[in-house]
Every structure is written in structure tokens, then in C-alpha cells.
Length: 115
Length: 112
Image (tube, rainbow over all chains, first blue to last red; front, side, top):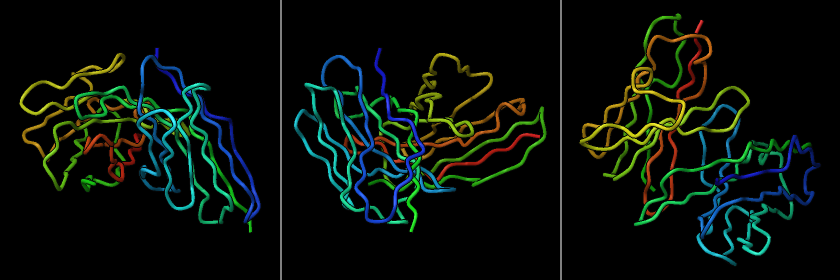
């Protein structure tokens, strides 16, 4: 079946450090891939997405590239800030006909950035 | 994106009671979803709320426990019935808008 695996957290970094959060997936065909972020006490916010192989999603300095050959969608940021401290979720969907359908989430990775 | 609001934002309930959570979207959307996030866990889909027909439930979730209504294209409710402490979770609704799901702020439920 379809599944998403994220690197285990928590990830603790100093401010301005480089961030990578690994995400790999298992799915047949060509899923759409997403990163969501959940700040403390809040709901989920879409961070970025990619809908086909080699697409790069980017937002707020975060980037992720859809790599079909390695079934990966790793999240990166060149210089993290304290305000980036949150839980990050990788997700895939297998919808069609103009909708995403069911989202399958990874287990989430907690990022803590220290001043 | 379609902006989503949920009510209540949080509640503390006694076991054996029921709570209805409302989800309002500011645009008409075809699909709406309900997810559960247990403490410290990821999100799990409860059901897809279909306008004009019964909701479609995922394995492990049943209508008697989580009845869902979808009277129109902008509104849905989820009821958590006969609650137990194991139902303490964050419940989130989402919509499907231009091939992307957007989430509401969630309802934080504590069952004593």
C-alpha cells in the first residue's frame, strides 16, 4: 500500500544552520507530494507541494524536489530561524480528476531551533 | 486557498457524552475530510464527507461513533459519540481546493 516515512526527530539545530528532513514514500503511479507544518498549538499549514517528478516546491525559504528515482521528497532550508520550530509532516495523495483524495501522512518530525 | 474555520476550538467533555464539531469553508468545495490527530501522533483520515450522501469511512472508523453531516458545499459537522478518554485528540477538517488540501485550525478535545 501507500506509505510515507520521515526521519525520526526531534531535530535540534542552532539558528542559521542548514536543515534537511528526509522523506521517502511508497506508492504506485505518480502521487502528489506535500509538506505541511504545524506550529505549537495550531492546525496544519501547507508549506509546499509538487505534483510530478522533478518538480521543486518552494515557500518561505524551504524547498523540496520530487525525486521519482529515489522515491524521495526531502525538505531543505539553507538557514533556519527560531520561528521555524514546529512539527513538519510529509504527505502524499493519490487523488485524480482534480482532487487530492486521501492524504497519507508520515509520522512527523519535530524541529527545534535554538538561538 | 479556501479558508476553513472550526468550532469549538477546544472542549473538555465527560465520558459518555457527545460533541459536535462544525467546519465552515468560505468557498464551495467538492470534497471535505475529517482527520484525527492523537497526542504526539500523525494524522489519520476518519472519513470523507460527501455532499448529499453518506460519508465514506476509513477502516477502523464507523458511522455510529463518528456521524458526519454535509448539508451543502461549504459546511460539515463531525460528532464524536459516547466519548471515552481514548477519544482525546485534535480533530481537523480539510477541504480539497485546486488539487491541494487545506486544513482548519483543529478542535482540541479532552475527555475526562
